[in-house]
Length: 197
Image (cartoon, rainbow, N blue to C red; front, top):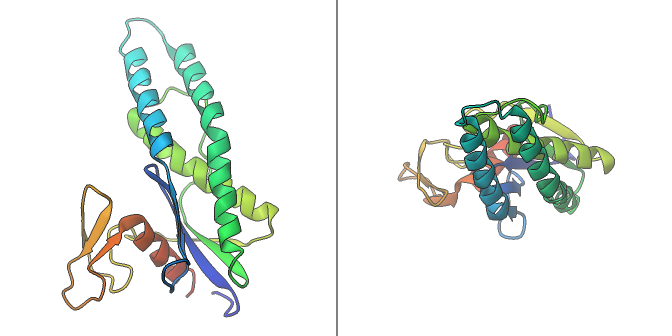
């Protein structure tokens, strides 16, 4: 149950958009979007290099591990910078409380062999963990909610939307005032509303 004096800020994490953050209601200026194109490109390079190593006829586990650790050390400052920006954005609101999807927070060990899907899941988990750490440092509370279908449903009416390749969710409810919205922002608003219950 939320405290009526708190402002829930939904935080949606991903790869192409690192972080989208938004309160349950509000317009322009109340939302934060941090683009992740540069990290997405690095993750793609890492995935391709890992696949090439795993296709070799000899054990490449150590090479894969070193490659992953080297890439992580390159992107770690950007991950924590995005997390810090998210917390700073939330602090613009009265009594902010960050609302994250209730998923595994720990990104897991850097060491095991990884599949392409493991690599795709690792960055969002690392982002969630970084947001939690930065929020703790700033004494901003964090709650976790069941994300359900927040990335596929319209934040305004709850109807299932069509997802376009450009990251836009198109609401299929003709009576809804939302016709097109960035999928990540819609998800952030939905998370904030779930944290406002």
